[in-house]
Length: 125
Image (cartoon, rainbow, N blue to C red; front, top):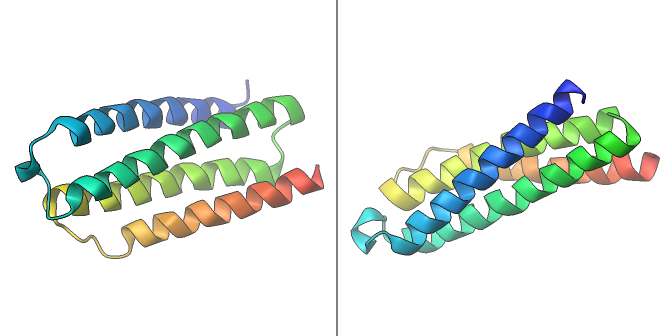
């Protein structure tokens, strides 16, 4: 299995694990552990993280079936980085009220770019 596929599958598994853990914390922690409106923010971050973990698994399967084409490989890697930035940025705001500047918006932009690259990579195949 190519190294990039192995990395993406490893990342997706960890992202899904931490999303399940985050979902449990979000569901069961008392309100005082969240900033104002933070529980809903945390739920959104957990959902985005899980959806993108599943998407990265799908990208990995595509790469195994069709080879590691540049556009699709870059899309998977950007999706991994974007997922971390977005989830961490939103999580910091949700739990501690810390606004870490452009981390979450940068992550979201990387996620959008990853989806666009995936579309381009698939249409070129």
